[in-house]
Image 1 (spheres, rainbow, N blue to C red):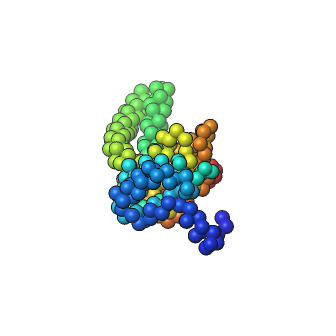
Image 2: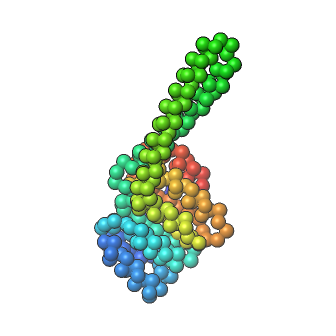
Image 3: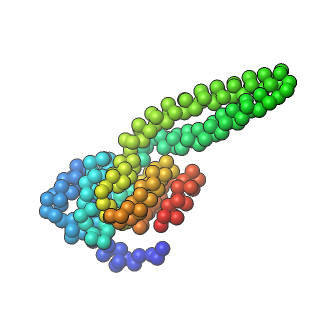
Length: 238
């Protein structure tokens, strides 16, 4: 992409409601005042970067509401350098467990296949040995799969409390989206969050009403190799 000239960048920033560096309560108060005064229509979006505190569900909702009333041709929502992740290994653990679930499911299928093949053996002892070994493999896979589902259920509950989950879910829940540009620079995102983001952007793109997110900035997030598939899908959408 072309580098934006300093004058052009300053002009763009002047068109955003600047709440960068504020605390959550102060930002909420300012957005409430802007809503009462119908200020949104005079701006092209909102800058909530470098928030001095937690980006909570209420603030995210108010930010999306502001953007919905701003920028007749689509608004920019800048959340750069705001912590959206859990701050733990929750997202990485979810990714690892889902990968293991695929492996264990494949192992179980192979044991089921071997159990079926055992019945075709003419030698009784060989057949019985194959069945026993297959049954042990199936039981071990079922046990681990049950443990994985239990762990994922708890981690899923935890991830739903993260800011990224709230942001992406609220974007998807809108009846009409007006966020055209989304800046998530250095927000502590993980591949797990990108999977949901990909689904949300695809949903918004195919809706008859509202607009699609056309520009997404993810610089500074330590996404790693685990995000390759999600990033590839996002590129295909853009």
